[in-house]
Length: 220
Image (cartoon, rainbow, N blue to C red; front, side, top):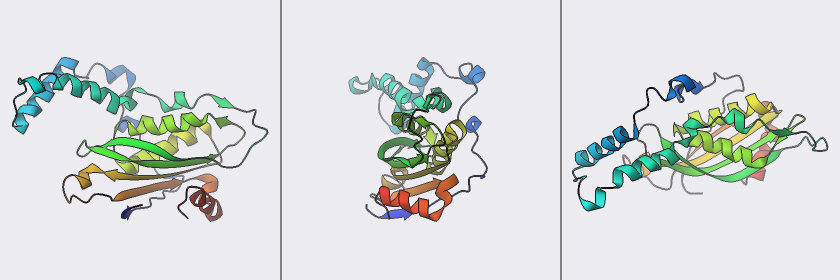
């Protein structure tokens, strides 16, 4: 790993939850206040002009449509429900009760302050309490929250909170390591710096369990 700006955030499991309402409009209000695609494309044209270029020149004519289409991918998490993703569980696991861990999950998000990329890795584990989830669902839940405008700290809490509330495991551990382009490509312009956030709940608050998790992701 390159230089690390390490801010290991370890909120207690009873820490104040981050409200979904901060990031997602309620279903009944989601469409009525949303600009049309045409309005969104017009906004992109305005930004092109503000930057100093001509949105009517050949190379930029289709840019507003492409930008709006890319935003549908970048921010698709606003239209997904993590509870639905985690709803299907399995009990026929021969009473398995040890750590289930996924490491080095690719993560791509966007900073809510500058709307520039956040790229990195997530390492997540949980200890089941009678039921397990399909492992791909853990990666999908990370993507749901990553594909919104975010701070890394908020995203860390939201992912763990969603898994705890829906799956109700004995504990969850999460570490996110990511580079922020708001720091690497603007401002102080320091590239190769990872921001690290973490949260440990339940059995992972035990130092021995935390150590096992860190060893398995190669960070001990």
